[in-house]
Amino acid sequence: MHIDGSNMDDLKTILIVDDTELNVNTLMDLLDEKYDILAALDGEDALEIVKDEDSIDLILLDIMMPDIKGYEVCKKIKANEKTKDIKIIVLSAYLDDDKFAQMKEHGADVCFSKPLPLPRLKDEVAKLLGLK
Image (cartoon, rainbow, N blue to C red; front, side):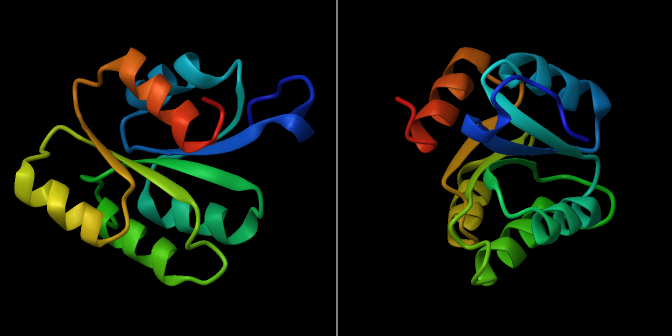
């Protein structure tokens, strides 16, 4: 789903991937004024969107999803020559040091534990997109 805004050509594009609609909506509310937002409620849809869209700059990716786990989504995105440079922020309620290390191995740039520290997340998004 696209969120409309002005001057879309100038906006960076973020894909939010989370199987909980409330989480997606919270992140959309946090970021939609500054970015073009796409959303997927599962890993399969996320991979399809990434395959079809050339303009994705950053992905906010939940680890625990019912079909394809975030680990696998991250690994597939980073293994593809066309998508390997997309920045990925992993979001998870189950993030410990081992999972953090595993996600970094799969190509995640940053990991955040839920509940999310929204101001820090917003700053990290801007930093990864070169806007800060």
